Length: 131
Image 1 (cartoon, rainbow, N blue to C red):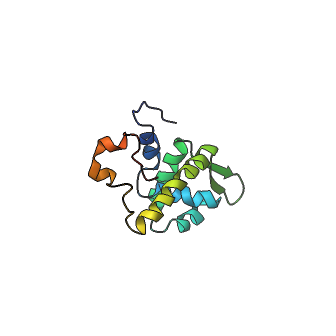
Image 2: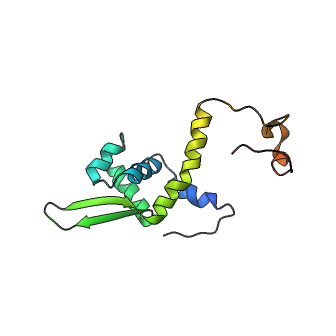
Image 3: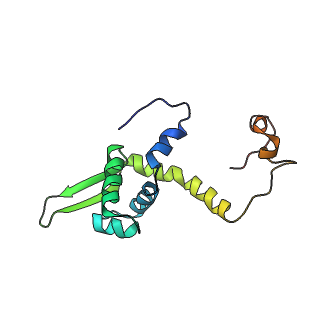
């Protein structure tokens, strides 16, 4: 597992989920404990090479567990570690925000939006921020 010092802790989470496929892989693993072929079907459009690479990265980061069953034929299943489950659960509010965002713009809070008011409005008491 990689550890580094960052000013914003969110950067560490974004580093783990960055890229086109990792969030989709994590989402698929949240609902299933698939073998490789099934996981590839659950993430349409991903190549076998990229899926292997992404799974290895997620395993190295400690969010995905790869279990090998020594039987014939060899069977490998993927699942989320407790850290991976917690990561997926922490992404649920982001998913909620995305659904709201995709349905259209929100009305500004108060007399002017935070964008119109500028960055100082985000730290001023009494200025509401959208969740």
